[in-house]
Length: 438
Image (cartoon, rainbow, N blue to C red; front, side, top):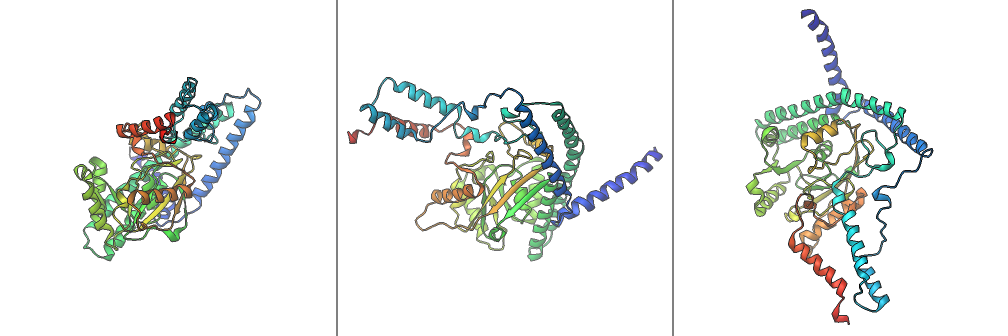
């Protein structure tokens, strides 16, 4: 036993020393030794080869049937209102029996490819990333691709997964210990500085645990203290992505278990805003606590995701107006992930948090772009809803995302009856026509 320990102990020493010097210390201070860059270059070349191999071999085979998103539903760009008006004009009447087929087709189109539910599933891939297939064009299998996929499984689960779990555990442990220690210091500029330093360092270690490569743009527009940072929401790691480049005060519901331990430690060092479930139902109380925070220009900017749920990296859905009612300066941020290296979207209706984190830690890498947009304030005569929509449109345009007015809450809840009635009235008016003009 003693001989075995004498052999293993030096190996463990070398491993942890290499982990500290090559990964943790550079991550904590935002430095790069070129290891991640080299890994990404090799990965890109490998994925390019796999894609070219698929495309080349498919040409020798029978062409696959197109997927549902590439031909099953063929839409034109005209609106339903315009089509109905044209049909009414061409036959000089309000309604004909043949219209039943027209409305049936439109109804089936809406069911098969509506613009809401498809935002809650993983986006289609342009090329296969050797992780999963979300497009029928990538069903081809060859011996070389199978061997390459098998090697990838060994690398991802045998090397990357244990290393990433270790780094994430170290990052969270240091976050709890560091914020707890800083929390004992008296309120001063030193405590604020150390708190932000601890948060950023620990988030950077966690980001390295995901092999995250983050490209920040327009840093001159970074959120400033006393403001509100709002961003589109794709994944729980959006917080890690943004906090790598600066400190933020978080807003969220109080949790129990391990998450509760982390929350209680964090709030000792930084004025994060955690709400009890009963308080979350009191919108006026939440608004007041947010307003009190932004009135103190020494406090870190608040980070809020107004969509309230994760959307699949293709769109931006309705922003809740709450964070736009408190006043102050809004700092919009657009986040766009590269799905080629891993699917960052969290489908909470399908995967638990543990299952999702396992998928993330066994992906090749997390690559994303972050754009800091110019600060925005509410215009005179503009209400909170209009302000929220203006900010949402700016984020969608910068991130190359689809700007949708639908509520992301439809991911879990059914459509309200009042909204159904409004749509039914609008639909009825289109079918019957405007009697005032007849």
